[in-house]
Amino acid sequence: MKNAATTMTADASKVAEGGASPAQLIDARIEQLGDWRGKTLARVRTLIKQADPEMVEEVKWRKPSNLLGVPVWEHDGIVCTGETYKDKVKLTFAHGAALDDPAGLFNSSLEGNTRRAIDLHDGESINEEAFKALVRAAVALNSSRSGKKPKSG
Image 1: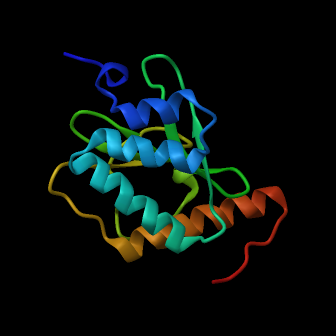
Image 2 (image 1 turned 180 degrees about the vertical axis):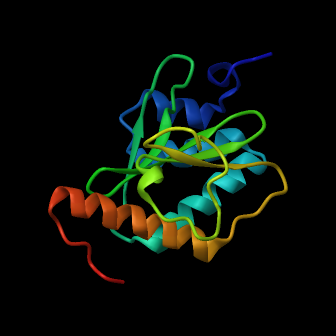
């Protein structure tokens, strides 16, 4: 089996090696996936930006086996990460255990005291309004911890 670094498109490889912005790296990651995982990651990225237009995109944990790194969305701290695996897209909320989840979106990493995750598999959809509410709640939590008041919107 080839790893992600060897199956990367030429365009994605150029982005990964150059001084690309986080947004460009995430675009390249979505392109590199080229399947349902890329479409899912692109959709949740759009929902995150809709939920909080001031969200900052970052890419962390870049290494030789994952040149494009892991997409991270931040607002006064990490809100969530978007990891991709062969069988799922995992959205991990940094402080998910402290968030109300009335729609029951969290379905992974439920045993920990801090993080919670949403695993999305091929063919699954997400309750978009509940997801955006969860993102806004995570931003509000981060802002309350940083002493900043989030803008309403």
